[in-house]
Image (tube, rainbow, N blue to C red):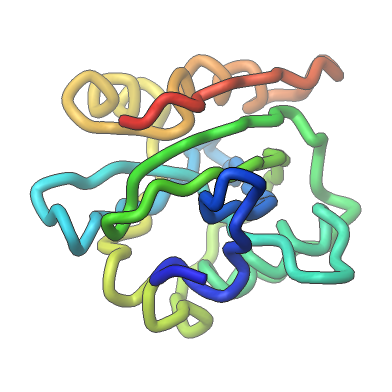
Length: 178
């Protein structure tokens, strides 16, 4: 176990690992909901990312996605409204002075914009998450030139998913630390 939390289990190399579900949430205007976080061990570094989190024992990926959306945003989403998975991402990253591996499955959801709340955030999330913003994709493209946005190429993928999904699941390997 590490400072990341109990759901992170050491893999065969001793590196904390978890499976996760993430959701690209679009509102009725086609804006994408992202969260900005920072690393409390390196406060100068921050990044934007989709909502989601670790899969709990006994959950399907869809159940994980729906639970995480509710906990992180207050949005209650019916699992049948999830599209995908549209993306499978493998990532190796540094956070809280720990190198970790995560395998993520991304879904798409379209919702009517509502007031967001973070009542379901964990203590760790409250300490490292800074904002939730609905992004116009053109504005996000500009932001991505000066700030970290994960996964890489999220804007291009979001443009593909915003108005429908062609059924192709993207495989993305971001297993370099950075």
